[in-house]
Every structure is written in structure tokens, then in C-alpha cells.
Length: 326
Image 1 (tube, rainbow, N blue to C red):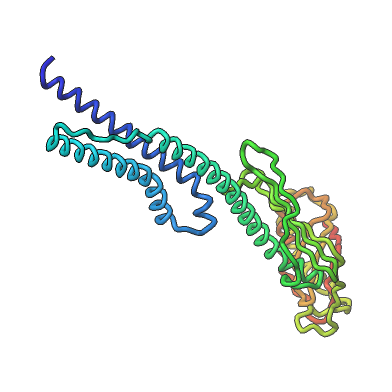
Image 2: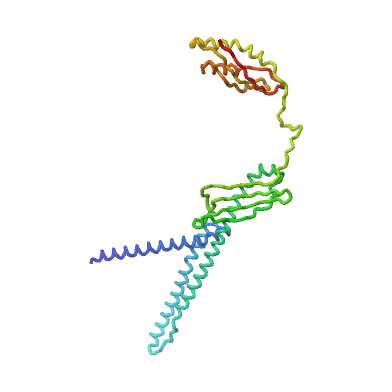
């Protein structure tokens, strides 16, 4: 084998070695991050500081191993130097206790990791509960804009929220159902907010926050002289027939023009008109027609919408009127 080929193989082996080390570091970093993330969220530690903490957690055992190895190497160098100066002297070497120290550290690390993961799981549940509570509280505050007035209370009158139960309906996915409630003792108002399919990070279908209010609504007393209340008119309009009679020549002319293309067209047309207190025709509909001519019927609606009645304290009029075209 040539030297160039041997050097190339050594370089490839070194590259594979470092790639494996980097992948191992990335895997350990992700593992530490997953375990410690609930602590970061609970204590509101910034991501940059959290990354430094995880990196230090990875570097600590390596630095400890490096320190121990350096101490051993220095001790060996000292013994070799002493032996060179005194070849006939015997060096008392202590029995190695490395295996007991390693066993102690392994047991300590296992116990510490167990309590670390257990504590992380508890903090994760606390974080999910706080997040779910905030979501339901926001929904309740929005709903309170309308509902609190109905029950005659303020948002500050409600005591809560308190968690009624947490139901894990998919243990393998970590999704929960939460039920929160607020209450007010004197007026016996109770608000229940339920959050479905919540996994602590994002929504999963169905996206549901169900709120229910229980209590006795306060009767709403209308003010007699409310400044923004609409006026109530009771007068009956009397100019309907007069205005329709004035409009009949225009309507008959439109009918005669339509009859030029359909000489046999005749029959009755019933229209429904709605007239407001200002004398404006706000709506016109064809209730029944014997003509069968949509173009003329549209022209009729256009003419009727342009009618102007007298303005006054008149009640809104809904009137049916029948035209007999011959």
C-alpha cells in the first residue's frame, strides 16, 4: 500500500471520528435541552442564557475528567523523575480506587438525573396548567364584556379561576382537558370554562374553548327618555292612494311600450311596498303577477321605488297594491 493511500485512509478515519463526536455532542445537547427546558420556562430564563447553561452542563463532566487525567499524568511524571534520580529506591504506590470513585459518580449521576427528569415533568405540568389557565381567562374576559352586564356584575367580582379537574384523554400524546371555574357568592353567578385537546404548546383539533354562564340575569329597565332611543310614531299615512294615482300615467306608458312586443299581455300584478316615516319607498317586491314579463315588472319596481310620499310622524307602512293591466 502506498503512503498516499495510507494517509488518505487515516484522514477519512479522522473525519468520521470527528463527525461522530459532533453528532454525539448535538444529541447530548438536545437531550439536556429537553430535560431542562421546563425549568427555563418556569423561571423565565432567556434562550441565550439557557443555551449557555446547557453547554456548561455538557462541558462539566468532560472538564472534570480532564482534570483527573491531568492529575494522574503529573503524578506519574513525578514518580518517574524520582525513580531516575533514585534507581534503587522503592516507590509506594497506593492501590487504585478509581473504580469506586467511578461507581459513586455513576450512582450519583443516575439519582440526580432521575430527580431532574421527575422535577422537569412536574414543572412541565405546571407550565401547561398556567398556559391553559391564561387562555381560558382571556376567553372569559372577552365574553365578560357582554355576559357580565347581563348578570349585573363586574369582572373583578368573579373569584377564580380554580382548576376543577384535568383529564388525560390521550396519555401517549400528552394532551389534556382542563376545566376551570369562577364564581360569585352573593349573586350565585358561576362561570365554567373548558379547554379541550390542549398539549401545552399549540392547538390540536378540535380547537375548542367552551364557556358557560349560570346565574339569574338582572332585568334590564329601559329608560323612559333615553337620548339615543328611536322615536316611536303612530300616525297612519293617508296619501298613499293619491301618490299612486299620480304615478299611474307613467306606469301605463311603460305598460303600453312593453305591450308592443307582446300584444296579448294583460293581467293583474300585486306589489308589496314599504314606506318609512320620511316618505321614502325602502322596499318593493312583486308578490304575484299574471303578465309573465320580467322586463316590465322590473320597470314597475323602478318607478315605484322613485315615488315620494309625505314626510311626518307616520308609522312605517307595509302595503299591498294590485294593478290591473289590460
